[in-house]
Amino acid sequence: MLQSVTDVGAGILGTMSVLIPADDSEPSSDVGDKVEMARVPRHVWAYAQDQTDLVDAARDIRRYLQELAERASIRIHTIESRAKSLTSYQEKSGKIGADGRPKYVDPAMQIHDCVAARVIVFTMLARNDLADLISSHADVIERQNPGDLKHNGYDSEHLVIAALNKRDERDRYPALARYFDKYRGLEIQIRSVAGHAWAEYEHDVRYKSGAYQELTADGRSQIDQWFVEAGGMRHYMDELFGKIEAHLIAVDGESGSHLTSLDLADSLAPIPAIEDEDVAESDSRELDTESMRGLIRARFPEHEIGDEQATATLVAHLERLGVSTVGELETALANVEEGQVARLMDYPTETAGARRLDDELLATYQDRYVETSADEERQQFLRLRLRRVRGKFAIYSVDDGGGSSKVMTAASAVREIARIVASAEGVQAAIIADAVARTRSELLPSAKPQLVRTVQGPIYVATNFTRKQAEDIMSRLVQRVQVKPVRVYRAGDLLFDSSDAAAEADSP
Image 1 (cartoon, rainbow, N blue to C red):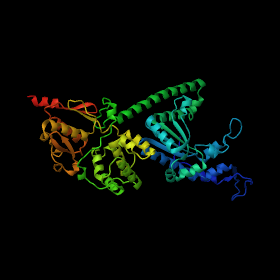
Image 2: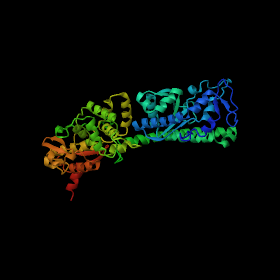
Image 3: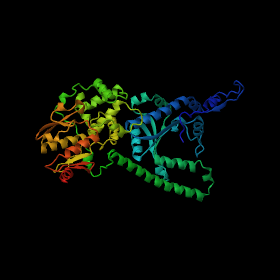
Image 4: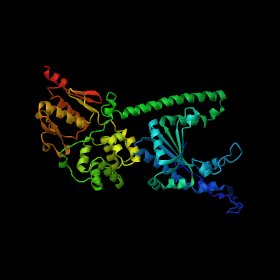
């Protein structure tokens, strides 16, 4: 069991008062009240002197792992970290090998758990993702799963890192940098919740239980076999948790409809960028760091904006996407319902507005946003976060008799149905107060109206609907179609059918 960093080093001051480094001098027996001082190896004395730095390093590795997980939107159950106690270090460093020689010639370089951390995540996918992140950001000198050799049900990723690779991360975590200057390795264990439950109970029964040790060989063998069988059930539980997670990712959180009936290529399509020929009428201010911070402040008034580097990164990323004004950015975000992306990301802690906007842009542009990132590291984090928003917005399709359209967002579906109605029944048939109008001025600027061209003439359609509002508008528009069948699907399930509306109108 890992100790909390607040418990580490208990009793050390009392121990240190009777320690002197081993050197060529004789141990003194005339110190203060004549208490004889014990001779200890120099490396143990050095370890005692490093206790404060070790505890600080344990705190740093916990914060560092938390940061990696949050940047990738990997949900964490718990993170524990600890510095090995002086007593434990002294015992381990003094071990003798089978050949009668000291097991550790250079303990600081050979003992890799002087500081250790354990991360418990919910799924095997999350465990593998976090292990891969650590491997790409740190100097990993060992990565293994001991369960692959034991075949007894144990399943946990064990990594030993020797340094952080990035200069800015070493600067942000100075205690870790100091630790790696003196100690060769730091051990990190990553387990799923199911794997952790198995490991904790197995450790408690087989290693801490006196009753187990008192059993006959046959009795211990029976319990060992049951643990193997429990390991199989643990593996099945991990698989089920993975399926649950995958199902949640592919589900529309409001309706609960699964996307399996949609074509896979369509379900992975990004939200289409809005092409507004009248964008010049919107906010034409240049998108720079200052205007970006103002937009973030207005969009997320209850949250800190974030540092200037984060906002500068967003500006540069949007420039690569061809978004150079505040109005263009607001137009691109018109499909994102307020707070929806935050709910999907399920932020574990207070999160700055710059990160929240980054995720909203990821939800908007999806794969294109990942691919246009400036560097591989940012791409890695964005790709992991994309899982949480992919398919959550583009879940509607419209069939006007010529086959279903590509999947689209709720706002895009409203525009498409309005276009069909106006083209088939005339512009007046598509007009809905505060939603669809002949001119832009008939709608409030806050509605962020978009131009839609039809064969009967242009119309303007609001875009700032909630999903519920959008579906209400879809329903009303579909009921106005008389000359052709129009069907609207949500996540592959039929939502509205103009034939039903016509049948209701004809019924007595």
